Length: 270
Image (tube, rainbow, N blue to C red; front, side, top):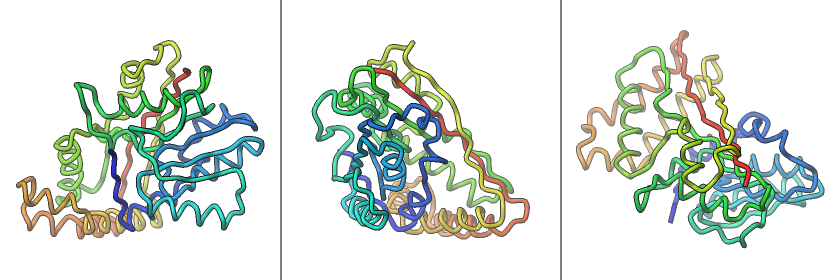
């Protein structure tokens, strides 16, 4: 089961997400009466944006984090959205019947799934998303390609933290490889001719964005159980772990600071 634990810094990151920015590639697919499933919805900001695009349909958000679901439900009430609902659910065993949704969407979810039986985690996630998608419907996913990270200036603790995240993911059997989306979809059972791929860039360089991203990364590192585990298994030393958060805060104050990463996007027709 993909038990994702969100610390406050992660929730802050997810609350900034919108359909217009983070799921723009799927918006042309939407029709007003569609049923949408948002897998790994977090605090529900994208889900609610999608619900507004299908006023005669509905949007359902699922996430393994009960705290995230409660946040999403509260936001739903605040916005007065009546065609959205949220529940706790696992992408590996979605609590829905076969062929239930017109669009099944995931944003930065598949890279969290560990592999099994010789297939990477994203393959298993896409298989389950495909199961609940209606024939002729769409399974859509946007995932980070961690190998594409560009960060400047080169500050030791920042570079160490980026390398550590990839190492921890690999150690847990997770793959942060959005560029392999077409491969994962094909292995999940989609016809290669029905899979389209694209890319989107995420960039932080202006003063407000880099201040937010630097503090966010610092807070995520400080509150991460993964960092403690990394020290215990010898991936990093205690001194390296201590300097990583402050390195991100230092990066955020640099006038020339630049951070960019590419996300891979796939749309799969069932």
